Length: 389
Image (cartoon, rainbow, N blue to C red; front, side, top):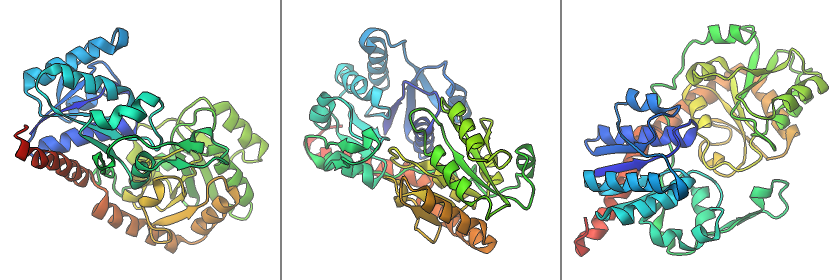
């Protein structure tokens, strides 16, 4: 097949990583794959590392017409059969580019967010304008097909997530994956020393951005740490990431008496090494969470996980077998789970080893490429009686 992946960002994050890795996996299966994207972004060098064929896009310009025009031209020149966009901001540009290209590619969109499109226009007409809408988790598919409503939630974006109008059969699920060769168990004693950790200390870490208003639950993580650190004196608590809440989190550390116990670690570009330096990943999400691949990355490094039961996260591992699940907005339960992990090295080891086996069986990038390829092929099979393609 002749496939064009569309990405106007390439600035980092899970969506960009999944897009690039998917393109690489599809190309490795013998398909003609191109990436239509800017050539001067943070992840542009990664495109070259993966040996992907980059088709540069024009500057967006008014109404994104420059971007749309260049994507349409690439479709026409390469005879693209499938046009696949990943970011919400690329949905309508991709649809318009497909229409204007003159070659009638199938339009596939991936929804990486656990919430509905923000505009009424998209909720009303999106399904009728694409051939498949891939949800990255069963939870995301439920949001898109049925809607999810939590009117009492303290988080505004969780209160009402209405469904899309149109044929729900166009919504399919392809859960994400990670590279188990990149994320695998390894020695990270140098990283632990850089963080000031002693070999006997048990390091809990939250990995992810911490932008206002609430980040990914880092403040709840610190509250849990404050509740248990005197009973678990060897436990240390790290927040890895960057964002606008740095001053707030540092003030929390001081206020909660966690100086020398908890810290904001510098942003780390070598995430496999960071994961291996931790003893347990904590994912205390309080907002929305489609399918957090950071959980899979930790599990692939033989690390147990403590996570809140937020949206798509419970689909990634079994409670008590690969990690522990706790309610959202509950620092007491979060602390109890961390205390259990800290107090039993054999339990930590068993969770970590079983977690890696689980990832290898269900959540690799190869499996992601196979799932998406099956979706592409299903469109072709359905269209054959009509002579499309």
